[in-house]
Image (tube, rainbow, N blue to C red; front, side, top):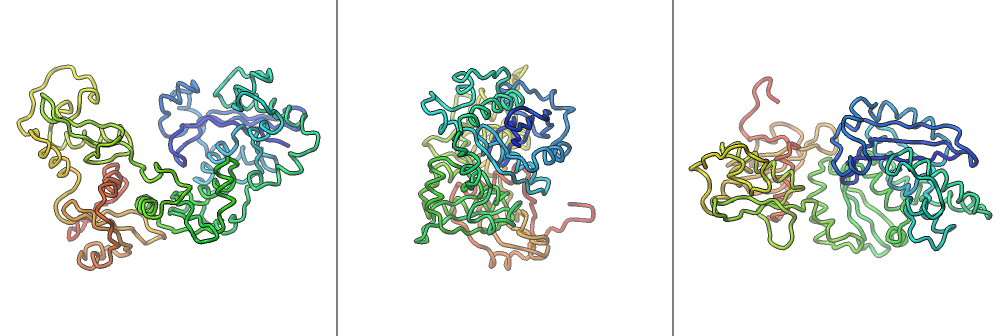
Length: 450
């Protein structure tokens, strides 16, 4: 039995996508015998480009079931069946990540119709679903909707099965790692389902071929060995061992990944892998004073790097609010929502680039010593990041509350980090998006404070 599946998701970085629609057609090789189609409430915003592409709006999913409400149905329908999709690694990864959030290890034998179409339908102009449907006269009326794409994939699968006179699919394809979900490291990484950390892939000579990080390490590592792209197959052929380093803290994983990528220069990583923060804050002298721009980083180094345009605008907006400055007196006009009336500029606004940078620094980092706490590797442990007068000194593992307040001992235990602007930007990104707990050593919370 084949479970032909298509998902629509929110998009974004791998590991952050959430399902907004799922369609499953149970196909016995001749006809559809069962089906399940539903919208899914993602509990995160649907980006405008996804709304435009799919036609699925926020109001459409407002009363839809959440994933945990449909998870049992998906498990029951697909149990014992082959998971089929066009570009199956994408759908399978997202579905596994959704199940991993529920603490369930979802595994199925997987069939991807793209490589099979390339084998049985050579000479096509391209192998995207829309192109194949046009070339093969397959009805595809609801593009970029789960039911429309899944129903078209059923018809494509029927054609591929008819062309497979040598039974290659059953005899060879479905026994490969990409289909079975198992590879030579599966047992080694089995326990890392919801583990946060970094990992290294080595060749026979002990050279690091790839460094990565994730908050779902097993899912992330599996992708290297269950993908059939040319680059993935080349990496699979060279890897002879791997090592996982649990961090507990995603920030620490971000920091260590950046350091290791710069130091080791693994051949299978891309240059962009070193930088999760690709936008920057730039002070600009204008006729109206010093204003801030937020833009993608090209060549000029920014004062601070941020993950997105929205993060940069929000951070500068926070600075403006704290100083009681008008937003239009801080940001370039293109970044400010339309204002109804002109306001008088504050006398306290920075008049030089140096003053503007100093104002941002004062907002980013309190004076004195501050410890920022994140999760540890196990219950009872925390990861402490220490900043002193705006300098990011390093990190340490702590267990007891007293350890955070004993600054001299904490400093002795620190693993120092180099004074790279990027590492400081990473810490600032986590601090100002509310992902860390700030502690001022020597100041203990009173009863009722958290």
